[in-house]
Length: 176
Image 1 (tube, helix red, strand yellow):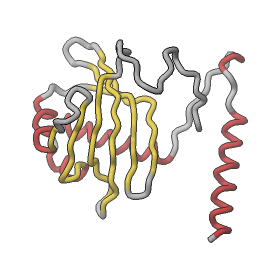
Image 2: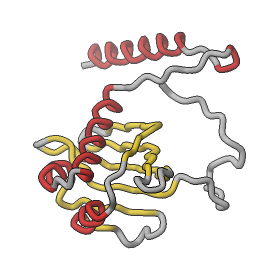
Image 3: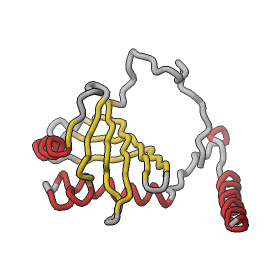
């Protein structure tokens, strides 16, 4: 068991060192090329399926992707979750739109995965995009991954500082 853990740690360290050596700073005039991890690729596909099911009004696909106890919570109504049926009905009432996801991160905890991303949705009439920060909690079930809880809120710069976030844009190094 220790040997397997050692080999896994060695593999992760080697990959990290290789990717760090390939990164060139922006000061040298070369932009970083983000790499997509296996989990980001997997959950991007699941989020694509979810968005496609909403746009196609497919209750069959949604019933596969959403857990029976699914709910959405927003910053505007933190104590009033939107239950599964109401979320589906509201999603189907909205006009079909195109959207993109950026800056996805996945934290794998075995049977639970926390997926966060910036969701840019284009309004079909005005062609204006709105940005939403989403945190999805996916749960691994016998039939695959199901979305259990979605937390969503506007991703705009507000007048209210967030505790723990520096006033100026933080210069945190991103883990690859």
